[in-house]
Amino acid sequence: ATATPKVQHDIQKNLGMVLAGVCLLSAAGCSNQPVGAASGGGGSTAAAETQASGGGGKVTIRIGGGPSSSANYTTFAGIGNLITQDHPDYLINTEISTGSQENIRMIQSGTVQFGVAMTDVEEAAFKGTREFEGSPVEICHVMGGYTTMLHMFVPKDSDVNSIGDLKGKKLAVSKGAMAQYYMPILLEAYGLTKDDVQITETALQDICDAVNDGNADFGVHITPFTSSPIADLAATKGIKLLSIDEEHIEKISSENPFFYKSVIPGGTYTGVDGDTVVLGTRNNLICAKSVDDEIVYNVVKSIIEHHDDLADVHPQANQFNKENAVEGALIDIHPGAVKYYKEIGIMN
Image (cartoon, rainbow, N blue to C red; front, side):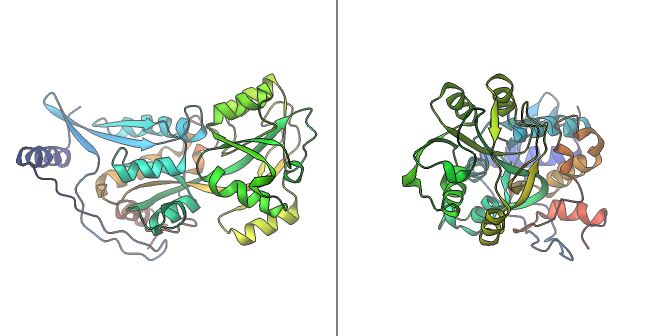
């Protein structure tokens, strides 16, 4: 495909910088107000790679997703295909990761330009708190999406029916925020500590394998439904999904406002016929602060304009929509996104 004049200009500029041995970074300003914010204006140097390809040019955009069979990876691999329908000069690669923390670390290192992150992890990185203590990451909010929710599962014949039953049990917990922050919060709410259980931090597929093989009594991962590895485990071994009672939901969410009550509908997983009441938090698309305004604008515009196609990508993918785009954003919104949101009337 023939590159746009803007892309050709970026290619020439980047090649010139390489030949001169100079790296110029121009940070874009961001808007921190979902309503009434004014864009910082002006495009920045593109954080996406530009690659010469024959007579034209390709812009390579990398997105940190999640585990290979996760909702995040599946969603953004599919969204990438939709964006390239609108912009054939974009090459979009969705990268496998362990989740929010790793996606942000990859943005920080320049491995990717975009990533998926839960609200609390996004805020911690932006402010340089918690796992990013003293090292704030220059990121911006791009777009809010679906709820990612606790999936707490045990074998169908297990005597574990709540978090309160976990004392002395072997827990397989997903790496990152789930193991470092969410699991201690859950245990504390039920009067337990990490010393009362045996925790192994690992990837989602390994969690499911451990529960299947009897090497773990309990598995937990935070993900939108439907999760393919958990669905496979439910269909082959049979599982119970654990709910959180109303009292503990109120206690945990009042102390940790990024959490809110969520429901995994009955029938989502084989053998789990009733609704499972749990805690969830919003999953957001974020990007490096330095990503070019035009690229962010085009990405957001394509996602919203392909709303009717998103459900074919993943059952919850169409929650990346204009209703959720700026809802609950706790960090600066990228000016490229602000420009489009103003155009469609969700910011002013």
